[in-house]
Amino acid sequence: MSAFADTLARIFAEGHATPIPDLLSDAQFARDGRRTPAAVLIAVTDVADNPQVILTQRPNTMRDHPGQVAFPGGKIDAGEDAITAALREAEEELALPRQAVQVIGVSDDYVTGTGFVVTPVVGVVPPGLPLVPHPSEVAAVFTAPLGLLLDSSQWQTNEVFWRGANRRYLEMDYQGFRIWGVTAAILANLARRIAYEKLSDVA
Image (tube, rainbow, N blue to C red; front, side):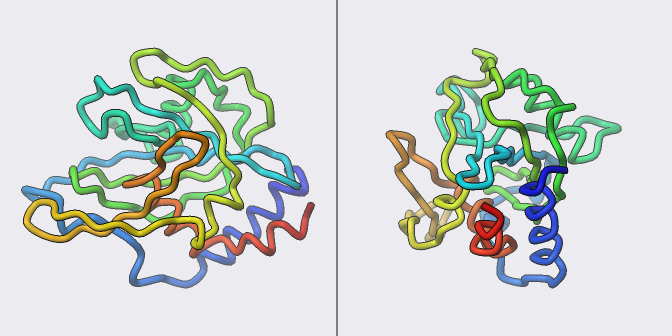
């Protein structure tokens, strides 16, 4: 591992050593009790002084979460674990070679209002990978600074009445991309696991 990846792995492990009971979840809005396992890859570029996170925007034609900013990922197929599924999906969506990912660890599951149980997989990737978005799955690909995404002061809290109850959600506008919903909640949960100020010490 690089010095950055090694430091991230240490801080990640420290942050996940103790249970956190009040992490964000939309489980109360999921209907019928159905749960579909899914995984996403939180790919962080190996740049110690300004690590970036690779994000995508889903096409408006997608059945689930159309047009939303997301991490590369999708359903976990039979016989797969979360890591295998996240790496496969990133390769399918962005031509991101799975062998280029240094897996740091698996973070907390997030239950979406549409019934997916999403497992975030954190990994470090080399900067400047020639990503090629799959046109039917990715409308755009961009990066945003990890430090910005993990900074709770940068997020707005909004509320909407949805499925019979008030739902609070986080939102951020970054260079014209609206980051909110599932992606924002996963990042907010991750921010409670990763002490970014310790990570920045490696720069």
